[in-house]
Image 1 (tube, rainbow, N blue to C red):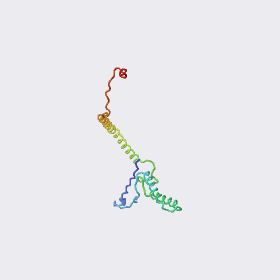
Image 2: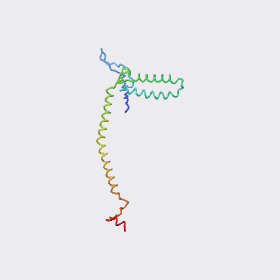
Image 3: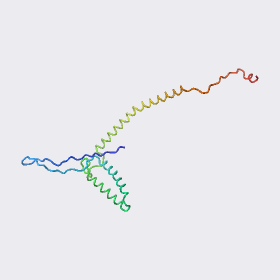
Image 4: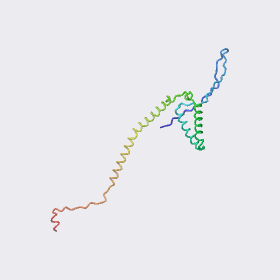
Length: 171
């Protein structure tokens, strides 16, 4: 099965908003809070990436001494997952607010992949019988050619028919 890809789109800078003044109609620049989080579309895909990174962290932990390995790995894993969850937004929502279920975009991707597979199979169902037929015809022609080239090596002897077998034994 194909792996789900994570869409990462950096947030555009939202430094300045224009706010209309109440008295004089002049515009005043106001700074808004920038969203520096990595924007993703699938919480499930990010979770899969976290699992992959977790395996790498475990391999790195093999270099640690046995007595501190387990607590250190647990601490590093928790810190890493917490950092990712704090710095990732799923469709503009914080990690905790995003749902785990399939999003419309996930379903759309799956439907597109399913459509591609259907088209591919339908194409093969049209092409392969023609290819198989060509191979069968070539095989039959090759067998016919081999049979044409066959010549028996043993020549049969001409046997003479004796009408009276008893006379042939007496003589």
